[in-house]
Length: 115
View: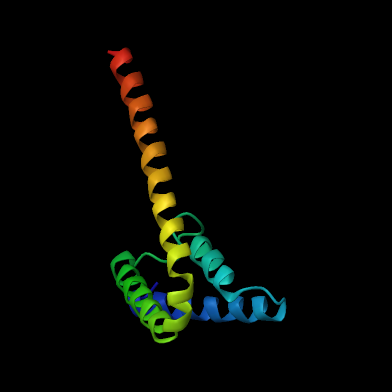
């Protein structure tokens, strides 16, 4: 490649082509972007080597996505689903902590027996 700009341009071109194909197939465009990221990244063909620049671009993209989601939030809808979302979130948190703690204990116990 000729530098980070060329790699980002190639990445955008491949994403646009894959996105157009997925729209034509009536599939979510986000899935196309994930496939392209895997294909051109180090796990795939390794076409993109400008990791720092791509990481920065990804962080900016996530910030813009969260901003756009925040603009579309309906406060009435949030008040309506708030208790359910809170209960679900706390349940997921408790479940993750319990499973994580059990996994740590299992791995810690196995490591102690090995010595």
